[in-house]
Image (cartoon, rainbow, N blue to C red; front, side, top):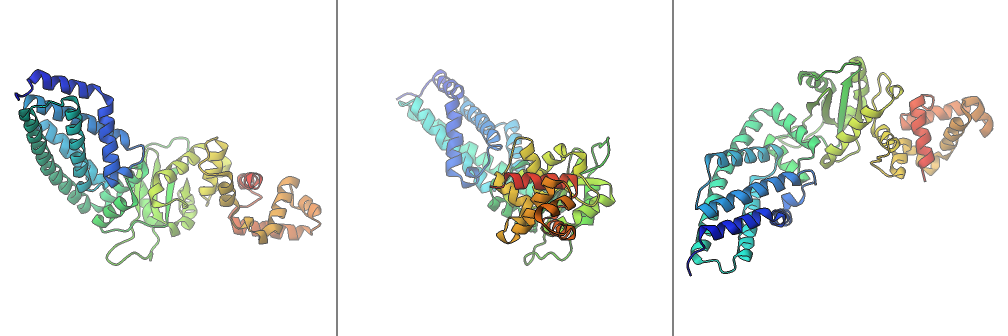
Length: 398
């Protein structure tokens, strides 16, 4: 059988490039067959799709023209490998994704040219083997070089890691663990994600040394790591805000440290490491929407404040029951029913004296219960913002 003329290969190429189902088939196959890609969140899939579309068109071009990868292709492949090294996606998984894509490409061509001549099939196989060999070498080399550079500049590597966590670029906890191991660090778990900004009408973009100074002030000594590793804190910037990933124990110090610098912030402690992006969004949204009286010297907004603000904004990130438990804490226990009654009476009556009369208590007894509520929840019912959060929580509680 004679080979397909170039025009016939070109017809197959045009048909495949114009059919969006081909790229979808490639992305679906990679998503299903490569575990690291199966764990990618939706925000990362457009990038995978874009790379798949580019790779499809270039490989088909090479098949039609009997060509080879060009220097511009190699530069792009090296860039992709460097990006994958920076976001912690293992190079073995990346190369496997390309092999899976090549298999789908072969199946799609065969479906459109069932009587494909031996010469065309050989040309396709030769092109794919050569391309895969070339990209494997280029990407492995670029990946290793980037990985080495990142490990050598530890502070920059940690900052890039935090940037990727905030952007949700890590595919899984496993990939995150692998990247941390290469840096010789252990990320804090539990952790505190602090988003902070200077107080004032004008808050220009800040230099990185500002959050680095905050990081030094907030680092908690003596947090145990694992043998040979170090618990790593890190800092980065987002416009006029500093973002710090700290050990969970540092949360208690954030209010004092920020207050001494005339800063305000929101510290999230209740999310897992694979949800740092969620924690950052909660904190950033809280700072965007919190009224001025929610900020007090020596105190930062917390998970509970952030969830109440999200609820008030009409985009809750937790169920009403979860929000209530975050705000009320131990007050939800049956043994603290008398404190819940005191809180309800105080909010409804508007003063300690009036609430005491409602409950047939001495005013001092009522005030003692309010102090206990403050101690158990870290929320002072006399503070307007904290009283509002307590009121919302007791109202939406099932």
